[in-house]
Length: 122
Image (cartoon, rainbow, N blue to C red):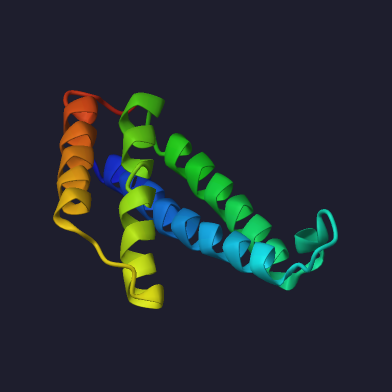
C-alpha cells in the first residue's frame, strides 16, 4: 500500500473517532440545553460538537488530497458506529451484546469488501 494511501486511511480513521465523540458532545448539549427550542445550540457542548465536524472535514480533505477515493474512504468512516458503541460502553456502561459484536464484525467485513481493489487516484 502506498504511503499516501496509508495517510488517507489514517486520516479517515481518526475522523471516525472524532465523529463518534462529536455525537456524544451533541448528546450532552441536548441533555443540558434546557427546555427552550434549540437551547442546546447555546451550550459549549454543541460548539465543541460543531468544531469536531469541522475537523472531520479537514481530515477528509487531506485524505482526498493524498489520493483517497470516496469508495475507499467512506466505508472506513462507517467505523464511527463501532467507536460510538465502545465509547458508550466505556463512558456509560452500556453493554455490547453478542448481537452488537456480530454487527460490528459484519460492518468490518462490509468495509473490507467495499474497499477491496480500490486504488488511490493519481
